[in-house]
Length: 97
Image (cartoon, rainbow, N blue to C red; front, side, top):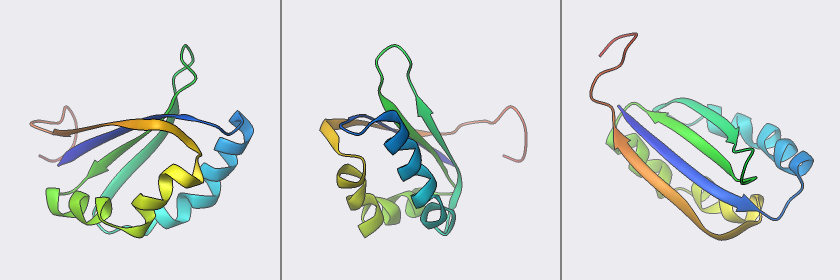
């Protein structure tokens, strides 16, 4: 399993970011291999992030090369380059390994 963090500043208002998240959620629910996605906001900086949990590296790679992934910067009016981190899950506290 892999965890992907995508953190960014948006040119949209908070309300518009939340609307965009809600409108696009069904597209993300349909992605094969995406176990879960959390939409989050850092209060201190005002930055937003998507935290994705992937079944496999292959599912993550397929998403990263998709039209949906490429549409994120324009959909959220991302200012500057987003911060992206990918981590391999070694051992979950709960659930199957």
